[in-house]
Image (cartoon, rainbow, N blue to C red; front, side, top):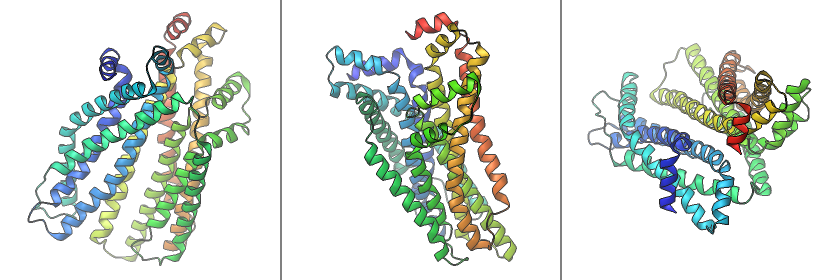
Length: 436
């Protein structure tokens, strides 16, 4: 089956480009920040510089690990789901479930190895640039030399391989079960995340306004709330669809399509909710903190500078990964609908009407993801602002929220409409014949 996996990659490389891109970015980011461990472990590095580098590697490295798994899992889930007929044919030909698992996991591991190897060079350049940024801001001594060693290399390769293998195994297992998920376990995890997130956000009121750890409870509360909403995304989407007053053929068909494909669209909503919540909450709270320090006339400490750098870096990493995950998932999902689009055109729909349906679906997805992401973000921003400044909602919130919502809308609608437009270039009869 491993030989079959390698042949599958060689004959259809386009299918694995999205997985390769996710693995490449994940390995590059993981190696870049974990190289700070190698740099801090050198002889002659002062304690302050070592602590700064170690904190950056630990915090961002942890976020990076989770994002690598989610990015690769999202891409592989769509990939494997679209190969249901192929996997069923292999099973009917005598292949056992274990053999199919080995084939799909072998494909993912082979692609992950290539992605990790390609990421070494960019990671070395990125790590050097990151160290220079710390030195320019005074957080790390200028005498510290950059080092790219075994910690960076092994962590990047190991995390990427484990994430790819685990995500591929879970994806093929779910497809083999017919897409049935353990709703009881998922609902329990969602409720636990929502409850813990609410407690974390409420715990903000127990801290004094000048406590250095004040930002931690609302930030983690917003993250956990967004995770809870993300786990419930199919149910939330169906609830929104039941209340949408969309009229006309395009609106009616968009709602019907979304309701039928709610479970398959969960990955897209997860990206939108997490991105909106984490980015809006983190950037807004950091802006409130910076304004409060500036108003007090104090100078930021090294720890405060480290926290600000980490917050902005985490938001940047999340933005990159979410964009990659959204583009990959939307491109694959829209391309896979070529037969559906062909059938609609043969039934009398014009290309403009098909694009209208796709656009309406994108608008509904964007609004749903942004709404629940905003709720999670406000649950963290409001307590932090009340404790830190005695205001309820900071002035910066609206501008940050508009920017994050604009990014979400641009990526979702842009990818969906552009991909659909390219798919519609194929004649309707040809699209139906090829898909069949």
